[in-house]
Image 1 (cartoon, rainbow, N blue to C red):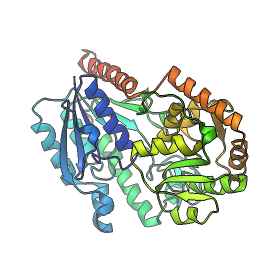
Image 2 (cartoon, helix red, strand yellow):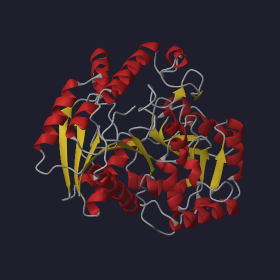
Image 3 (cartoon, rainbow, N blue to C red):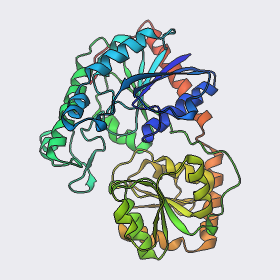
Image 4 (tube, rainbow, N blue to C red):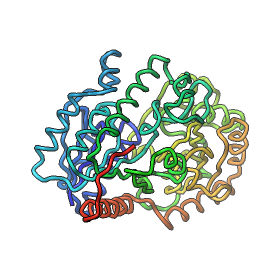
Length: 418
């Protein structure tokens, strides 16, 4: 089998690229031929250095690095991205059996959807976020700091000042969404798209908003690249840890304030717009981005728990899964897909993204015996059914086999989507 994986970058600039790259590696290790096509130039992750992986860069530029006017135009419809992707697919020495899209908003744009249609290949899309149905991608209102409750592109949606930056940015994102929807809608000679959901919660939210015709829905866990080892001793740690981008929708501010209220230090690994605000909270340590191996070592040495108190309906934060795999208790928002992996009170805690609730959970972490028990149970529970890279690749192979079989069936009907 030959799989074409499409994403914005060949290095992890977010969870979508991280999963795309790890998927490529896992599939290659299973003997699947992989071509990873990335839009923007830049360094490649070492995981892509495998004889079973061909890497094709389209030489595009991240729209975030463009002047605002040009970034807006290319974000809505990047003709050059479509032309280069079309040429890249035509130039491949071996035609892929399936194409798997992970992200398209920062270098590829909705212009690639007609190209995918013309390829005639089965297409899968992993929904790491809500860009397929929501203009701002998070299905979240930044003006009210709450998840959205209106139907995308309805009157209330268009009127809402929900963008994290401005109404002008909202207008650009709406234009991109309209272009995206039109690109898929007018492509009548198109194979059904297989949508991959990374948590039960995100599937339950997204599936009812997607018309049934033209979409098949699947549930596959994101991979966790943690080697099995003895469980950590979280009771020896000194802080609650947050790993990732420091933003309000991810609840970084709640971690710092909740830890301070509970009288326990907090450790932040990463960066983001709230970095200076976090540093101003007593007991908070911000250390910036670190390589994955260093992050794992830091968490094993210092974390009493890893926390992801998302205000948005996060599909599946990987840091929670990685903590459980290492035997570190996890605390997740009841809005996050990762909460599905936590046994509340047994492997960690599931809380509302609320300061009082988090402070109460953090206060419980002062009990060494409890923290040690939570960690041991988390480790045992995770490894009883691990979401390893090999397990992820196996699930993808079964998905692709079903997609190719459906495409080859005599009764197969091409249909419009959306």
